[in-house]
Structures are given as structure tokens and as C-alpha cells.
Image (cartoon, rainbow, N blue to C red; front, top):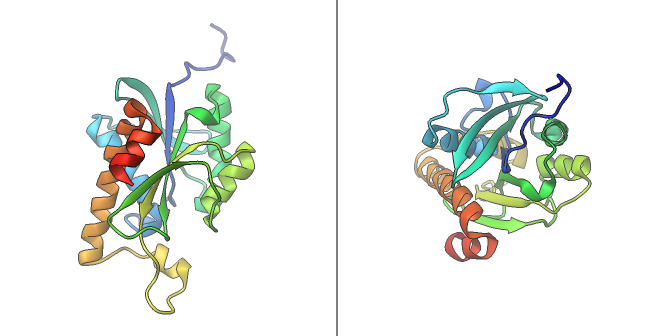
Length: 195
């Protein structure tokens, strides 16, 4: 095997969106990171490695070989590392599931879909630009809208407190349940169960 040959491609790539660094941990905008961390923990994978500007770990999930990914370039440029990883492994967007926070969904709930617009979410916008398509699966973690006149950026970069913290944890857990279900049962069955 030559040094330049591609690594074995995974059956699926699941990318959680967020921002790297302790100051962003457990904020609403890091819902995707939290779901991917939960999936890694459930699969018993303690080891993350840095490749193509992302943290990755390989796990078995729903009987498939899955690459879990946390881009480390900050949310607004998530598409760069993700695009490089897909090329590196020879994987297409049809094998990609992206998990992200969603303002237009109530806290404590999730929605699953394929494609669609980015609704001002810069992480999704970056991925769409770099991959040249919107045609990938998404698990959207509901965080709700900011109260009153609080700027959206302040809201998404804050940690939920009290009852909101419980709802956030609930949605993250639902996201971690939905990912293997989506792989095994397909989009329609997953939407019927979780949406």
C-alpha cells in the first residue's frame, strides 16, 4: 500500500457543528458537538485524533463503520475541514449527516430532514458552499429563539440555565438517539418518530 493511498472510507460521516475551546463548551451553538460526544461515549471511543482541521473518531454505530467529526475551524468555516475530510476518505455528501442547533425549533425537541436552506446558520452556509450541494441529512437540535431583544449571537453563545439546561440536554440526547435510528430505518421512519 502506498503512503498516498486513501484510507478505508467509512460507511457514514456524522459531523456535529460547534466552536472549539472551553469557553464555548455546552453553549447552545455547540449542540452538534454535544450530540457527537454522546455518540462517541455510547460507542466507547475515548480517542479523538486531529485530521484535516477536525477532531475525528471511528466507531461502530447501528452496525456501520462511522466517522464522527467535530470541525475545529469555528462554526462559520465548518465547511472547510468537512470538505477536506470527505475528499480525504473518498466519501460523498449522500453519506453525510450534519447535527446542528436550530433557532426555529422549540427547546427540548429535534427535527430531521434532508437538504433545505441554511436559515442564516453560518455553519450550514459554509458546508453548502464548500460541498456545492444542500443534499445531505440533518439532525436539527431545537434551541428556540432568544428572549426579548437579546441579540441572536449572544443567545447562541450562552449556556442554557435551569429548566432550559434540562431541555437542551433532552434535545441532545434525542439527537444521539436519532442518528443510529436514521441510519437503520431511513429518513421517513425517523421523521415519523422524532419530528
